[in-house]
Length: 82
Image (cartoon, rainbow, N blue to C red):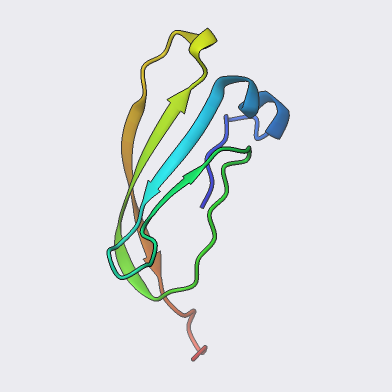
């Protein structure tokens, strides 16, 4: 998963976002990962579904407070796959 602005440009996103911290299911080690470079991408291999808590810290120049949100992540094989 990743976090970016709606236009998807990495340069634009890095102008506004300082870091993104992902809180994964406790079975992932480590399960709290802070990403400090656009596009704030996190990639893991797993199976199942769980809620990922996300904290976005904006650059001080924006004047925005950190934003917490959640995303329901569903990892499962496609039909016909193992």
